[in-house]
Amino acid sequence: DRPEIAADPVTVPCQYRTGRTLGSGTYAIVKEAIHIKTGEYYACKVINKKLMEGREHMVRNEIAVLKRISSGHPNIVTLHDYFETAHNLYLCFDLCTGGELFDSICARGQYTEADAAELVRTILEAVKYIHDCGIVHRDLKPENLLFRSKPERTSEIMIADFGLSRVMPDSKFNMLTEVCGTPGYMAPEIFKKTGHGKPVDVWAMGVITYFLLAGYTPFDRDTQKQEMEAIIAGDYRFEPEEYWNNVSDAARSFVSSCLTVDPDLRPTAAEALQHPWLTAEVPHCVEKD
Ligand code: ADP
Ligand code: MG
Image 1 (cartoon, rainbow, N blue to C red):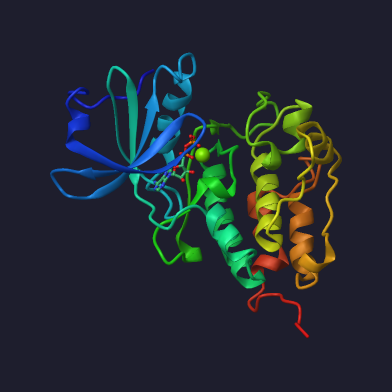
Image 2: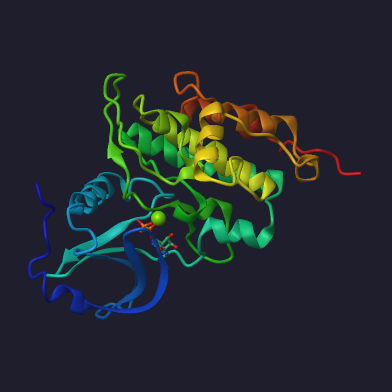
């Protein structure tokens, strides 16, 4: 079941002029693109069919998922257009000019707890929406979270990159087994191949929250094997102390609940949103001396 292709796929790319490269990932280069007729700017994900050979279904899946959810939530990137030529597939998105959350964290060192809580709440609301639509994202990480504009406002964080997402009916018997994602953000059950689903996105939110608060990720190890073993064991600490002494118990408790090794005991996105760290009117914080 191929997605509908624009009427004349060969001439369509001529409607856009591509500019500077915005970013690149595993399979794609994303370029700034201007729609010639309207002068509007977009982000165009260019996927080389040859590089994707045998995995073209992944792009078709990404398009199908985006058609189902984009425009439905303010914090999910909108797919505007897609078409293909003999060599490439093109996905045109709303342009996010504020850059990746990853770069924002690196620039700041770490987020204040109040900013982190607001950001995590906004992203989790969008994750809940995705899950309610029966979709699991599977690649949540700061490189796939983009700010709509500059200066970066927490309310304008956008979930992007649905390349690994899957439609996932609500059933315990409907589990995914393929090992995929970005190692540092992958949940234990993905490595254990015991079947996985929506809980993997909540685990990733735990890793992202830890990263926001500390400025580094919880399972960094010398080798990928050690990293995997640490994840499976849930072996992380709120250390070194100097990075954590300004972080409240509520924040630590939130991270710990998302990083529950057993996916059946891990909170759902909806439950995680009810955690006191996210519901507190006055953000939790530790008094500085
Ligand atoms: P991949 O599946 O290859 O990881 P992504 O969809 O994550 O591709 O896009 C790669 C990078 O391109 C992102 O990490 C981001 O830096 C940039 N990018 C993607 N979509 C947009 C967008 N709508 N606006 C601005 N930059 C984007
Ligand atoms: Mg990506």
